[in-house]
Image 1: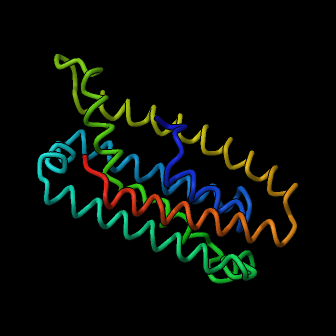
Image 2: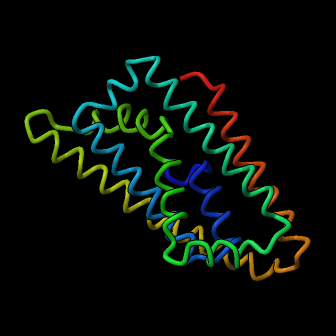
Image 3: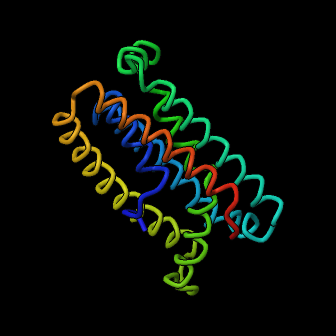
Amino acid sequence: MTVVPGADMALVTRQVLIGGPRLAQRTIAGNLTGVAVHGVALAVGLSALLVASATAYTVVKLAGAAYLVHLGIQTFRSAGRAAVAESVAADPRGRRPYAQGLVSTVLNPKPALFFLTFVPQFVDRDRSVLGQTLFFTLLHIVVGLVWLTAYAHLVDRARHALRRERVRRWLERSTGAVLVALGLRVAVEHR
C-alpha cells in the first residue's frame, strides 16, 4: 500500500521539483505524522467512528479533496515562476511543506480505512491492543519513510537530467494536474 501512487507521492514530487529532496523530506515528515494521527485514531477507536458515520466520512473526504485541488491549482499556477526562490524565501524553516504533508494525509480518509481494514486482523486480542496498533503504525511509518525518501532521491536524479525550463514547467503543470485529479477523484469516489 505504501508504494501505490497517491497524494503523498504527488506532493513529494512537487517538493523535489521546487526545492530538492531536503524540501521534500519536510513534506514526508508531515505525511508520516499524518499516518501517526490515523494510527492513534485507530488505536482509540476514532477511525471506526469515521468509517461508521457517512456524514463524518464525507466531510473529511471533501475537505481532503478540496485541499488537494487547492494544492494542484497552486502548483499549476506556480509552474511559470521561479518557485524555488519564492518558497524558500517565504518559508525558510520549511513549515509549509510539513503542514502540506500533514494536512493532506490527515484529511485523506483512505489511511483510516486502510488501518481499520488491515491492522485488526494482525492484532492479538489477548494482548495490549493499543501497543500492537501503535507498533503496526510505527512499522507503516518506517516503511513509508524508506519508500518516500528513496522516491524523492529518484525524482531528484531525474530533476537534474531535466533542468531545462520548458521541461520543468511541464512537470510542474503535470504534477498540479495530478493533484487536482486526485482531489476530484477523492471527492466523487464512494467508499
